[in-house]
Structures are given as structure tokens and as C-alpha cells.
Image (cartoon, rainbow, N blue to C red; front, side, top):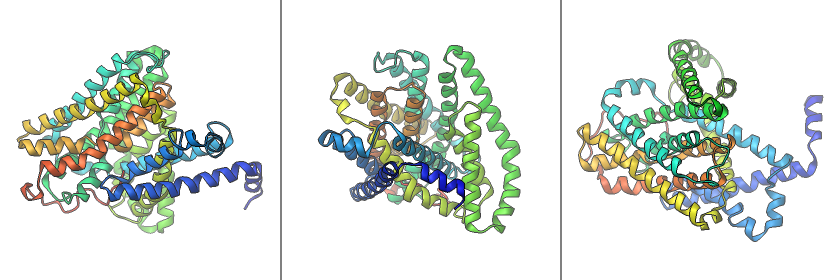
Length: 439
């Protein structure tokens, strides 16, 4: 270890390092146990991992043992900043891995057939979320936040779908090889990319609230230019050069380069005025363009994200939740409204798009159920909203509860809507490349 590293390690007080390591162990063990319990009853592990944080946070442990909770999970100070930094790294890597599951070539092939499903499945929930945002009163909406920015942020959070959660649910139900799964995943890819682009615009508006529509146009132009540059210039070059290099590198070297690429793109995104997660998402798309599915790059990073960073991130989300806020009438009403609008608008939009595309009513309901899962992306948008000062803790709580609710109902509705024997089998054998994050 170098002298600089020794000095850095020595600069951290022993009590802070002790609490940090204790927090890691407690969060990992609790997330593992609650995630396994959730999986046993048919829920994604993400739900159990968030529940672990809820049990350890102000909702349960903090109310029963407030002094001990303040010591273990301080809300300020060096220990809190270290956990926050680790959480930021976790979400950047998780979103990067999620981007690695986007199959751009498949998206091109199915673009015409899924256009109506994706467009209506995004537009109607977006409109519903924006309508709620304009009606949210103070102090649930911070007074200093422009109402339009708040409404657009909330609309974006309500409109999105989560590819990793959808993929895992379809695999668990044995539907991954069927045509209906292909349609759901293809539409989810478009919604996911559109969601990140929308997030880039609204974060830019939040950072430059005084510019109003000018800020939106500026951020939209920058986002479109960045995506065009990635698609036309960077992606083709990486497909040839990085793929050639990865075949020569060892597995650890390839994984290190991949992680560095995600972090560099996250940094570049922040320098352009976006949130780091946006750069991380498109970094994942770049990496998957240059490396084959299931390669030695994908597997170690996927395992690291699932085994360590995922549980830490979701348990930390639970730590920030105080479900006691739901005892307040306005907060409970807001949470119920967001849940109802999120579920019904996605069913209406995606289902209507499916019917227009020629699917039966049961198939349309199944498509609506699949696209209803929010998962990681809605939680990330909620966190970004808090970081930007747009969302209050109450709105954050409402969105995380919505994420859990929509994720929990997707599987049962899919099972009831369509029996596997009634679904047409598609010729594609592995639609999601490799097992997606169970999020």
C-alpha cells in the first residue's frame, strides 16, 4: 500500500470506519434474508431488499430504538457521506448493467410492430403523471420548485417501465420464449430509453429553472445530439475496436475497463448537465454493442451488481423511507392517487396500443401488466428528484410505494390474463440475452 493510501486510511476515524463496516454487514445480511423471503412468496428480490431497509430505518427500528439507530445510521457526518457515495456508485453500476440488457438491433427489427404500444404506453401515463403534478399542493410540492418542472418530473416517474424487472418476471413465469414476451420487452426498451431522455430534459430544467421552456429545448437538443453521436460515431467504432481488445484481455481486465467506461460516461453526463445515471445507462448500451451476450465482461459485472451493489442500493432506499408519513391524510391520498393513475394509465395506454396492433384482449391486458412494472428506473428518478430538490420526502415515499405495488401485481395479472398454452411461441430462444437483474 502506498504512503498516500496509508494516510487516507488513517485519516478516517476508527469509530467512523467501524460504523461503516457494521452498516455494510447489517444491510447486506438483512437484504439477503428479506430478498430470499420475498422471492419465496413470488415477489422480486428488490421488494424484500427495500423492506429490509424499511425495517432498519425510521419506520421500525428508528421508532423502537431511536438512539441506537442514530448511531448506526446517522443522517449527517462522515459515515453518512461514505454510505451516500457507495450508494451513488451502486446506482451508477446498476443502471450501467441495465443498459447492457438493451438490444438495439432487436429494437430496430421490431420498431414498426411495437410503435403503438410503446407510444401510447408512455404518453398516457406521462399525461396522467403531469396532471397529478399540477394538482399537488404545497408543502408536498416544495414552494421553491416551479410547478411545471415538478409536474414533468412526476410524469416521467409515472410513465417509465423497467426492463430488468419485466425480463425476470417473464422468465419466472416461463414466458420468456413466447411472442408476447418479445413484444413486452421490445416496447419496454423504447420506454426505457425515452424515460432516460425525458429525465435528462427535466433535470436540466430543474438546474436552470429560470429559463423555463428554453432550458427544456436546450437539454433536449444536447440529449439528442449526444445520443446521435453515440449511435452514429461511437457505437460502430467501439463494436470493432473494443470487441477486438476484449477478446485479448483477461476477464478481470475486461471487467475493469467496462466499469471504468461506465464511470467515465457517468462523469461526462454530469459535465453535460445531466445526472450521472444517464451517462451510465448509455455506457451500458455502448458496452453491449461491443461485447457478445453472456461474455466474460457481462457475467462478472452482472454478478457483482446483483450480489453486492443491488442489495446495498435498495436497502439504502428503504432506510430513507418513513412509512409513518402515510399516516398523514394528504400523503396517503397522494400515494393512492399516484398508484391508481400509474397502474390504470399504463394498462390503458399499453393495452390500447396492443389492441390497435391486433392483439386479443387477454394479450393486451398481459402487455399492460408487463409494462406496468417500474422497478429500478422509477426509484432512480425519485432519488434524482430528491437530489435536485424537486421532490419532497413525502413524494419520494409515494413513488417508492408505487414502485413496490406495480412490481408486485405484474406477475399475478400476467398469470391470470394468459395461460402459457394460449400464447404463440416465437422463434427467439433467449430474448433477454442473459438473466436480467431481479429488480
